[in-house]
Structures are given as structure tokens and as C-alpha cells.
Amino acid sequence: MNLDYPTILFFFVITNIFNIALFSYQYFFHHKRWYLSMFILGIVFQTIAMILIAFRNSLPFLYSVQISNFFFISSFAITTFGLISFDDKIRKNILWLFVIFTFLFYFSFLLVAKDNIIRIIIQIIACAFFYTIGALSLFTNKKKYKFAIIISIALIIYTIFQLYRASILYHIDKPYLFLKGSTVDNWYLIISLFIVSTVRIGFIMLLKEIDENTILLKNTRIQKDKLKLEESNKTKDKLFSIIAHDLRSPFNSILGFSGLLIENVKTLEIEKSEEYLGFINSSAQNTLVLLDNLLNWAKSQTGQINFNPQQINLSSTINELVEGSNSLAAAKEISLCYNKTEEVTVYADEDMLKIVLRNLISNAIKFTKPSGNINILAEKGQNQIEITISDNGIGMNEESKAKLFKVGTNKTSIGTANEKGSGLGLILCKELVEKQGGKIWIESELGKGSDFKFTLPLKS
Image 1 (cartoon, rainbow, N blue to C red):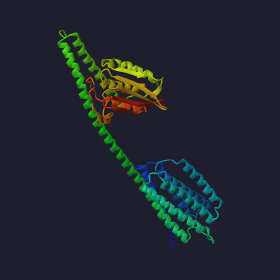
Image 2 (image 1 turned 90 degrees about the vertical axis):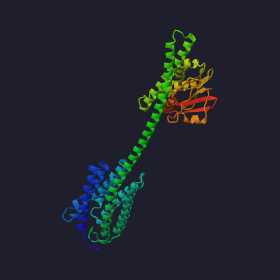
Image 3 (image 1 turned 30 degrees about the horizontal axis):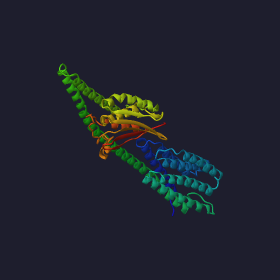
Image 4 (image 1 turned 90 degrees about the horizontal axis):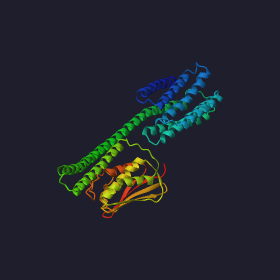
């Protein structure tokens, strides 16, 4: 089989120029990525080498052999590195390996430059070395792109053929001239043309596959965000409807009892006036708690609550909250006690911790019957502390426990003194405890009281 080598080389060069233009278009208008510029540079180097080989009869040995093969060996390394970097990761170890071996192969080539067969074998080994690393890297990539696998298979096939070609050349006894009509050279050109086309088309398709996967991931993420947003809006709508209802009740009480006082200020007995004032005060306090929780929850949803964790004295913080809640507990003749065991320092945001404790203590007072007991305990573990607010109030069943800490399913219950609330306080507690690296839960039995427990880390 006789092939027109000058025409084939010319076709190779024209194909390379077309590929340079194609990939340059991809670089400037679609994928402005450094690895694509590396791939283009590799094709440029290969084209220069082919042009020098095509004019080898009219060029000095330095250009036709030594410089042309430097461009050839470099093109193997640069093109392969561009291929395996399709995921935009700079693999520094492989980069240094390629640089070192490029120069090692070229210096080895220079040592035997006068021997046609040995220098071609060195060129073949260089090609096989770089392409094998490229094939393995593409094949083992975690994302398993199908065109990356196709390219890797093509490179392995070409490597096997090149090594077979090297073994044939090594056993040739007569003088060998490259591209002078040998069968092995004919197959080399045919297979090279096929593999080069496969790899370059495959690379274009790989870039397209990456684009499609990126778009798919973005669309999936957008869809998930959309569903979360819709769910969040529904949740907030439910919450605001609860709040709107629960805000009206205390204001109605305040307006009703204050109206009675105004109308009958001269005729009402002192005991009755004090009773009405007590109702007004209680309603105002409940409204203030609700508004505080609403404000804090809104801040947490918009990221406006500053998280400043530090080592704080737990006992001091609990004592402060207990003293602040004593008047509310005393109104129902409830005993509120903090069972201090030892001085404990926790790693937490003090403001957030106070919001959590205030809400849990207020919740315990709300559902504890008059003359009941509320105890606060702190149990130190190895890496965290467990804080318990325990009451002997009305407790709750499993169904009610399952609905706690959730906006959409949270149903407000009436307290033992007809106190009302939105349930927002417990939702806020869960968010603030989890933000500090802890968790919150409830242990309760209907008619026997509840234990609200949460943990906080001891150290950062």
C-alpha cells in the first residue's frame, strides 16, 4: 500500500489549523478556560513540528530533526495536560511530572539524534507515557463523563499501537527512513489521523457534556430553591396568621379591661380594680414576649442576629433570667428554682442563650398550674452541657410533641391561666440552639409535666 505522504502531511496541517481556529472560537466565545488554551498550544506545537518534517529535505538537521521533535514531545505533554484539566483543576504534581519528563525525553533524544530508529522509539515512548497518564486520569475521574471515557479508550488504543510500532522498529536490521513507504508508517498515519480526530471531537463533546451537566445542576438547584422559597412563604403566611390572631386577643383584653376601669373608675371596688389591672398587666407582658419573639425570629430569618460566641458563666446567666421571671411565676404562686451544682463555663452567644432560657422558662410558667414547681438543672458532660427546664405542669401527648418546633404544624395551646401564645418562642429556641452547635428536644408525659432540654458546647 503506497500513500502520498506529502498530501497526508498537508492534510494533517490543514486539519490542525482548522482545529486551532475551532478551539480558539470555543475559548473566546464559550469556554474561556486556561486548560483550553493549553490544548490549543499543544496543537500549535504539533503543527509546527509537522511543517518542519514536511520540509526536512530542504532544512538543516537542527530544524528538521532536533527542533521539530522538541515541538512534537512538548505537544504530547501540553495537549494531554489540557485534556486532563477539563474539570478546571490545576494538578501541580502531574504538571511538574510532565515538565521534568518532557526535558528528560528530549535530552535522551538529543543523545541519539543520529540514530533514526532509536530517536523515533524515544519519541514513541514519550507519546505513550503522556497519553497513558492522560487516559488513566480521564478514566478515573470521579464525575465519569462519557466522552472523557471515550477519549481515554482512544488514547490507550493509540498507546498500544505506538508501543507495537516501537517493537517492530527495534527489530529492523536494515536502515530505516521515516515516511519512506514502510507498512508500519502507513498504518501509523492512518491510525494517528483516526485517533487525533476522535480525541479532538471527543474533547469538544466533553465540553458540551460539561455545559449540559452544569445547566442541569443549576436548574435542579434553582428548582430546589424555588420549592424552599415557596415552602418558606407558606410557612411565614401561616405564622403571620397565627401572630395576627394572637396579637388581637391580648389587645382586646387590654382594651376591654381598661375600658371598664375608665367607665367605672369611681364606682369599682379596689379589689376589682386590682384584678382588672392584673389582667391588663398580664396581657401586656404576653404581648411584649410575643413581639420580642417575632422581632428576634425576623432577625434570625434575615441574618441580622449577630452570632458572637464566647466563654460565659452559665450560672450567672441562669440566675439573671430566674430573677427576671420570678414576678411572672409569683403571680401564679409557682416555685421557680435553679439547682446549681458547680460553676460551669459554656461557649455560647450570651444574647441568644438568654432568649432561649427566657422563652423556655416563660413556656414552663404558662403550662404549670398554680402552686406548681419549675426546676432548672445543668448537667456537665465531656464536651457539652445539658440544660433542663423541668415543670410539673399539664404535659403533652406524643402527637403534640411531634408538632413542636415546627411553624407549619405548631398549634398553640392555652396555658393554665388562659395564657395565649403563638408557639413562635419554641421555633426561635430551636434555631438559636442549633446555630450555637447544640440541639433541643422535649421529654413529656400527659398530666405529669414536661422537661425541655438543650445542649451547648463547653469549648469552641
